[in-house]
Image (cartoon, rainbow, N blue to C red; front, side, top):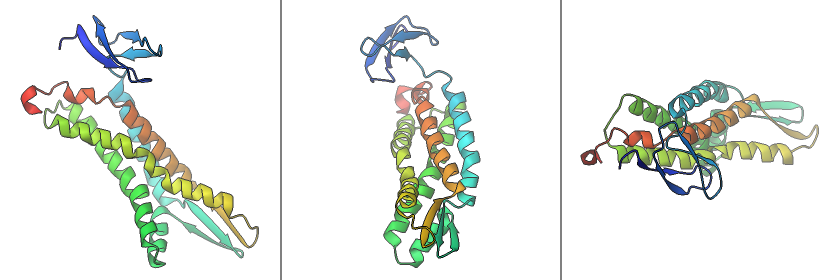
Length: 206
């Protein structure tokens, strides 16, 4: 398909549009919702790198600082993500430990690695396995929100457990950084344009 008959999708209502004679930097309006429609997401690579680097920076304190502090009878115990997982394992709650480990450690780290791989492959002009790389992007985009499970748990516990001197749970600084990591990786996945994967791909490479 030539540039003169290019198709583009609206980022708001996902309507597929034919955009004749629209240059790479051109903008059209969606006839259904009126939102601007671009042939490519504007500054996709630069924006995705910026968000990804910020997420990588926040990922370190997110794992070093405690996400939750339990104060019981005047004694305080702070837990990071990993120490919380270990605590759950030692007390026989391994199903919950697996869920927290997968959602709070494996998924965020996998998203950071996947987005880095996709960005590097696009920038070096790789033609290798574009369909598989597109699947990686779709999975990365879909699972991002599930990393918030740990934050939801902390939020619920902080709201429910407030018994004064008897027992109190407070959110730690690590939870703030971890929430920032999740949000930034979600924005990074959203800003990445998967069509860049196919720009250099030929039919026999699919």
